[in-house]
Image (cartoon, rainbow, N blue to C red; front, side, top):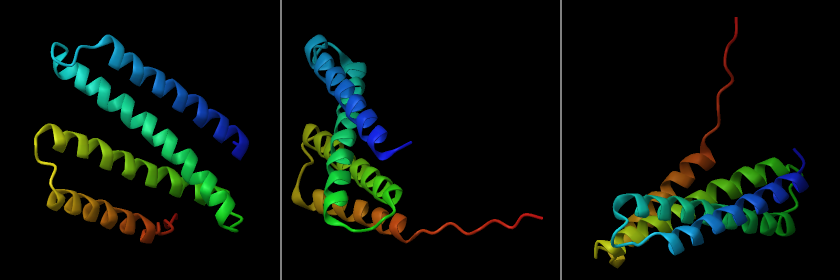
Length: 130
């Protein structure tokens, strides 16, 4: 898949996720919808944020870095978009539970940062085939 096709596909998927997110807000009553309304809200918001952050992160990397390997930029921007969207979703849940305090946010950011450092340093070992 070319970079142009990836960006177009990601834009279309992100727009579809935002439409789903606004449909969940419009059609579901948060007080009567129960658990399913919350699950649909979280999934649609998460996917819309991942798409948005992945596209923005990729475009920033394309313009600011000179690395020739575009697929590494795509993988890195998508992975970091997932972390940032997860940070937002977890923060919304902490706010809902009245647990959104600076100590919890720092611990959450630290945990996500450690996970990102792990994935940045992880290199797969070549398998031995006999």
